Length: 80
Image (tube, rainbow, N blue to C red):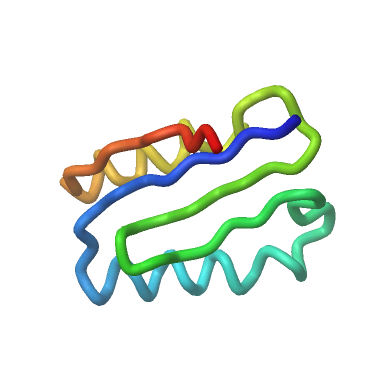
């Protein structure tokens, strides 16, 4: 059980750097994201939550940021 998806997006170097900084800060956050693997890939962003039936709660915030940046993107759930 879990939820896994990819966000395919064409990101500028600055946008990639911004996301990389946010991801690098996650382990230092007070509660972090236990059981979650989030990483930047060549195609965009990959997020997997282990043993969680509900979608990642941060998806709406990521979509809002991409919209505000004017980035075209597609969210696809991974069903292995």
